[in-house]
Image (cartoon, rainbow, N blue to C red; front, side, top):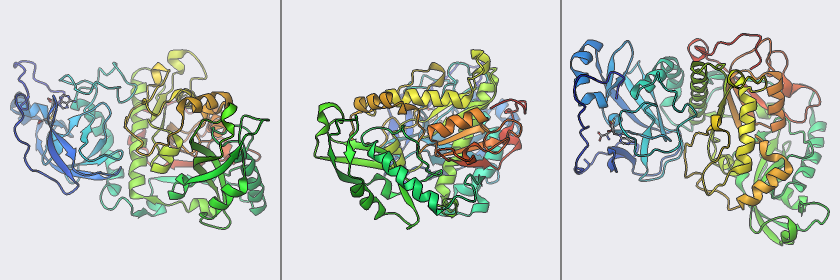
Length: 542
Ligand SMILES: C[S@@+](CC[C@H](N)C(=O)[O-])C[C@H]1O[C@@H](n2cnc3c(N)ncnc32)[C@H](O)[C@@H]1O
């Protein structure tokens, strides 16, 4: 398990080989139990449905000094269970910690907490009852994994410097700071709200001070046109000023409502009575000042377009933007669970960038996770996270910025995704990470082939509508513009680029007068260890 695998002694089979004995009746307070996993020995299973971002196990550790381990531990079965702690020491997780099996698509992440000498395990997505809970050991395994599914990211074969739990030692360095940052949010109620000043990021203001009620009214009118033209397809057409609209990521956004449709011979779209939609939506608007900007509608029912237009009733799922004032938007609340999610996603993008750096690329990466809220997950059809890194060096192409690569990958993903068949990405260097091949639990039953056709016809398949993007470096002006065009919901970045940045560095693109979309900008508060290995010339566009 460690990178200190003994090479002098003959390899012994791990203890789980042979017929499986009866699993002990061990059940921890989070609903994890021990079970047997075909070909893997014992494993940890969910005995009930567990939501995302829940701490499911805190394992105290037993620490071996490096001398002890070299002389004794590594010559025993412990070598399959221990992993690198700090200062060359090795740790054995007690409790359920040592029984998590490996998966290429893990549903559990963990952090090492040196203060309490323990490891905290946390779900990264909702887990169903009786599902196995797995972590990711690293890229160089010492056994043939049972789930030889898609790799956990695009790091592929080039993992010379990682070795089983040694892969975790990369995390270990990061966790020293990531852990301290994340530790604050790891315990306690995931629904507990986090005070603004305690958030691990700063929110930048992207709405000009003089944006007033009058403009909101104008936005409302445009948003009506928007949804009149977008039922049943992804919107990309006429501009709409949605003021970096706060997503309605609550129960309201997945309302299934019935609307009357009639064929519109002039266009491919259906004509919808806006008052019908609006009255239903405005009834659930949280504040009178707010406006609903319906940007994505997923339908359920017969195909739209062509001769099928004269459908009388159709069920649609609406992903709505709530157009709000700056005060309202700034008041968006963050729960502990959501902060944990953001920390984990930021950690992933940092890992991706470091890996790119080790491969000789610029250490710049971007990552679009599966949305935190289930409603947005369902409505956005984002069934798998996507990551990309800068490939300017290997491609000898000046435009291969991480974000442009990601937008391109997302466009292809949008155009090819089939909700019933998992993910597809035609770009080999941008293999998506499959966090959860079975999600989302409430996928609307729309016709995916028809959707992709609509997407291609509309040019809408590049849109980042409702999605959050994490990136290591402040996007350059070109990438900020691409994000704006893609209608990203919000961007988190770690390293400000004072000489080239388009999100506050040189200028703030989403704040410019006349732009047709505004997105949220969050500057991560961490520096030094988070940013280690991510150094690029300050004059470089990221
Ligand atoms: C930390 S232990 C996990 C618990 C172990 N299954 C047991 O019964 O004690 C690591 C060992 O589990 C097995 N294992 C873990 N994940 C596996 C996978 N995906 N496929 C096959 N074997 C796996 C390997 O034998 C590995 O050495």
